[in-house]
Amino acid sequence: MKHSVLVAATVAAIAFSSAARAEDLIFTLKNDTSATLVRFHTSPVGVEEWEDDVFGSQVLEPGESIELTIADGRDVCEYDMRFEFDENSNLETTEDKQDLCKLGSYTIHE
Image 1 (spheres, rainbow, N blue to C red):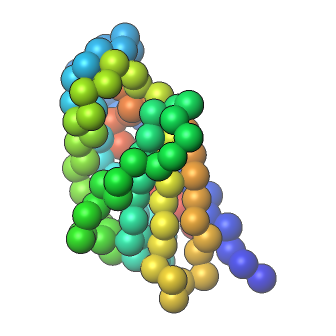
Image 2 (image 1 turned 180 degrees about the vertical axis):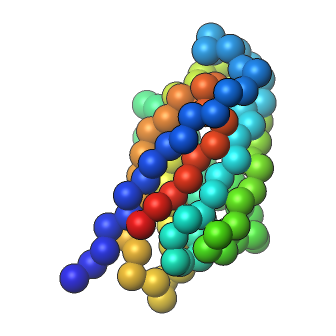
């Protein structure tokens, strides 16, 4: 039986306005699963294809956090997100949508 990954967002107070602006979107991503997160993709809502892997050659091990910056120059706040785990884990790829202008941190749970 495959385990599904439940994704929960924790909203923290940050200094961003909820209005869409062409600013860098900064948030902390925490891996609260038992598997290594190997790829993380974002794309503005409505864009049909995933943008490049935000991690590049990095990974996010269980229990680790990383501060991420989305600096694509777009005037949007809502992004689709795709989380891909190590192929040897029993966790499935997960997708979610969030308003990154309001998001201070995002924690992935099993």
